[in-house]
Image 1 (spheres, rainbow, N blue to C red):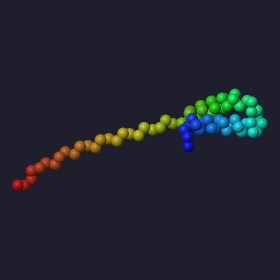
Image 2: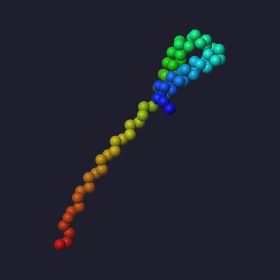
Image 3: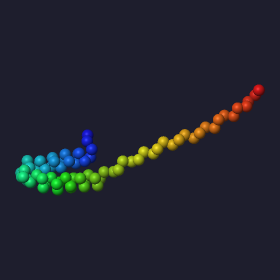
Image 4: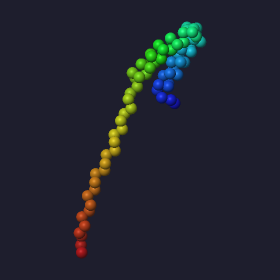
Length: 73
């Protein structure tokens, strides 16, 4: 999978192509229709994309104090 922007571009292109195939748009109107559809898809997707959650940085382990030496002699 590509980036979100790449997916938005592909989606807008597919929508315009479907409109041409269905006869709702002539091929000569591709550029104008593409701009409007791309803007709509981009705004919709980016309004619903959550920013990635930051993972908490690992905490440094608590230092373990050295064991007391001294026992029996």
